[in-house]
Length: 135
Image (cartoon, rainbow, N blue to C red):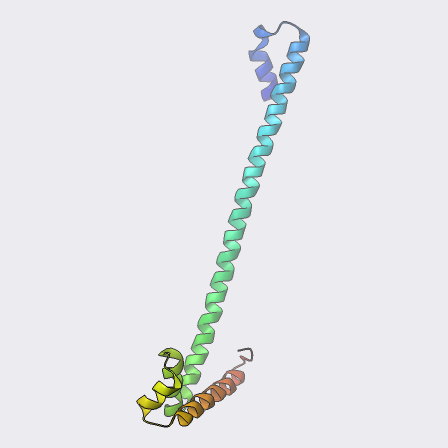
């Protein structure tokens, strides 16, 4: 429709019928090109939007799973015997070495290592009992 309107509005400029045809083809070709450009822009915007929504959904789901997992771990750590829990927290939360844990708790290095290892084993057992078997 736009092409015919353009031809009508420009009718005084045409010398012959062939000029009208050429002008109409040019207008229609430009309209097609513009339409395709707009569609490409729309598709790109939709793709970007879809990707961002997918990322948001995955990110929210991942955060939820991480939170649940950390809550299970925290619950399991609280159920450990006091000394094991303390050794585990010092190692993984405070980032202390076995030597530093041994010095702080005034125990032998081998004992600190053993307490940490036993804490990990008890945590594994507890997590498996809670249905978390991939760690």
